[in-house]
Amino acid sequence: MSIRQPRRSAAAPRRRPRVAGQGAAVRPGDLPPEERPAAAEDETAPVERAEDTGRGRARVPRRSWRWLAPLLVASVAGAAFGAVATMQRADRDARATAQVAAQDAAASAAASAAEDVLSYAHDTVADDLAAAQERMTPAFAEEFAEVVPTVTSLAEQRQLVVTATVRNVAVVDCGEECSSSTVRVLLFVDQERTGDGRTLDPIEIRTVLTMTRSKGEWLVSDSVSL
Image 1: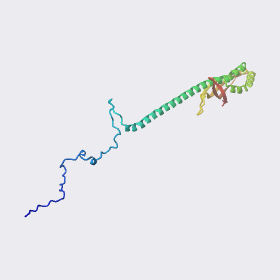
Image 2 (image 1 turned 90 degrees about the horizontal axis):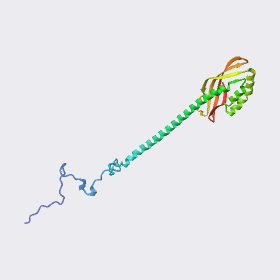
Image 3 (image 1 turned 30 degrees about the horizontal axis):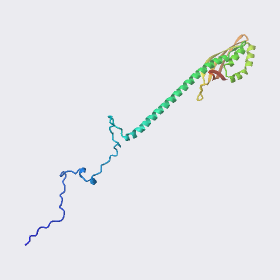
């Protein structure tokens, strides 16, 4: 009589579920290479690490230059703009100083010229008027020469002696047409006169002289009575 052995199941043995905390944790290094998880890449990490140069200093990561470059450009541009602005301001100041100096010189020359042109005596009238023409530009001296015969004749006939004195002088505003070589000057002049052996009434004259600098000297180039 044979004893029948119990039949074994061909199915794989059933595994018990793993309870948290039981068993050793699986490390990525224990897995086959194809099953190892890929390392996450930090997009914010610098392209290069700071490496020791051997002299105790580290190289600056390349990506940091992307931020430094605009700052460097801006600083250079700012410095250049500041230099240009400084030069322009210095040029304006120099031109303004030169203009003021020219106006002062022209005003002084105008006052002196006005007294020479408007003063004369009957016994020296020819020499007086010739000296007055020396204070004028050649073109204006030619225009003045047209009245010389009339003034000479009147002075000699009436025995005139005329002394001109400038009471006040002011530079006419030049606006946007300022020049360091041409300046208009307003003058208030008093003429004291004697003639025919007696004192005559004084004359008040207002005139604008245009002064032009020629060969370092300020000369009268035009005259307008007001």
